[in-house]
Length: 298
Image 1 (cartoon, rainbow, N blue to C red):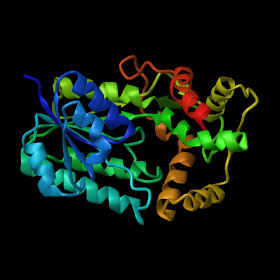
Image 2 (tube, rainbow, N blue to C red):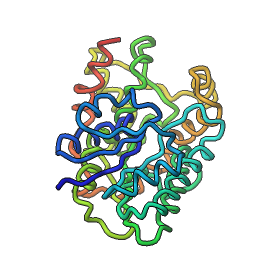
Image 3 (cartoon, helix red, strand yellow):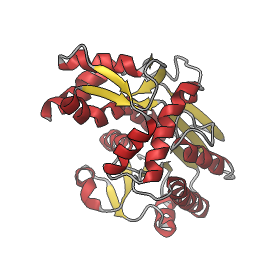
Image 4 (cartoon, one colour):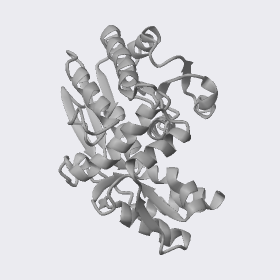
């Protein structure tokens, strides 16, 4: 008999891919979403979709109570006045539901840089949640620490199309591990399938190799037929203002810029690369499979 897995963030890049893998393998999934309309395709595949606020401890408790394991994460709220407070609100609800439900296996999506509580922007809240989960008694917790998402390049497709440049506030030449979200999902799904981890542990997922933002820009440029595509390191204040104009809160915009600028200090380079934490998808493959179709459709 296949296991029952509770899963938060099924509308996200990682959670959606985990859901697809587990449903195809015959698992019973309980998916939590603000509205079930975004998860119709998973309902059609046999998932149980529960419309609920992710901070509803009562609902989370009932969902966790009847599950063999759970995948937990903090979904983004880019309009949050205080992103750390939002992360704490979600994280504390998850912690309380785990305690009350008696569930024994948790796969938690954290991040490379999750060993640091400050100076790393959005990642600081994930580090705080790791500590809280580690304090749970008689619960096996596996923290996944993936590297910088290659999928973040998709957010710049419009910029590249319209302005003919690529850019963030991150250093152009500093190399960091970068990973495709489909590789993260594959690791998470395997862990949820086996549920063979014990105690509190960390697993890094570092992608195929390290890249600089300048190199990623070059790979994109060759794929779109613009080999001279330039990477620009945007001034922090200018980038923050641009993000605010796009609808992000000032606090979130500052946290994103802090995360990007902290990369040069080694935030993403803390985990030692091994064969076990190196995943298969290269940036070249990702750009061809995911970025190019999106770019060409603009």
